[in-house]
Image 1 (tube, rainbow, N blue to C red):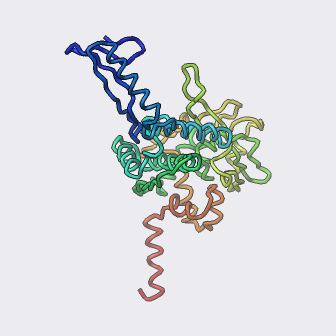
Image 2: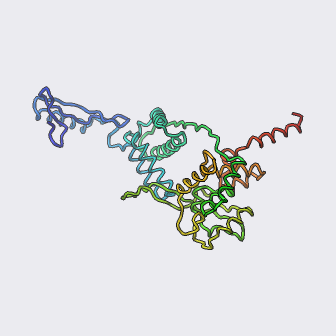
Length: 371
């Protein structure tokens, strides 16, 4: 039986075995040394001499009072707190605690190599995470490795990271007939939520932006909507009770997301119809109580099912708005600013989807040049 507080125990063959930390591998794995004796005292004396020899000069590779990678990860995260938005901090915290720390936190920094990170990436993908999620995790890892290299007292390995490619998915866009069916459904017995979804179809608002929108940001005089907030349900990292998430209303995802959107006459008429004349009221409820994003998603799923539409999510509404704008000849720079994008490339690559009729019309232009 092992003595309390000591790694010394009696083996089945009657001898005593004493174990001590001899060294650490770069991965953080402990390598033990073993001493044996006919008596407990003999084993204890032997292990004491081995430990003394190590302290007297025999080095313990890698470990030698060095911090493991988890130390630098946690230090980096503490420094980020207060520098980034709360939603960003929660994202970093989740990535660290769910993925990076469990798999790499025990390594010593010198042991993190390109090969180790490549294996880490493959493991994440094999767990079923999407390419985008894995890219996000690797981006955070890359940032922490740069931070560690700057803080590390000795030579630090160069780590090459290859990011998984995201398969390009054709986003769901309502065709003209589907759009008409949805609009007709929303206009029947229209309430504040149906009004909000229709307004999003007319303006390209994001779901979080729509949920955070108050009537004080709608100017019927100037025929504009000013977007300067978004709503998210996020993990509550300070949670001590049963609720593990919380609703946060904060600034949008980027500076370019803060914008003023001009309203069409149709949108202005709708707004006049539902204006509660209470500036602090949320647009989706007409009261000072908000409706959170997942409630809107559930409502939209119900609406689209009842009017016979499949595969429609809230982002489908935004995609449809952008595509209709292009089909109507809206200038791309203006559309990009209306959508709140940082540049027109994002607008063209992610949100603009030409219909077959539009492609055919453009192909027929070749007749003018003899083709």
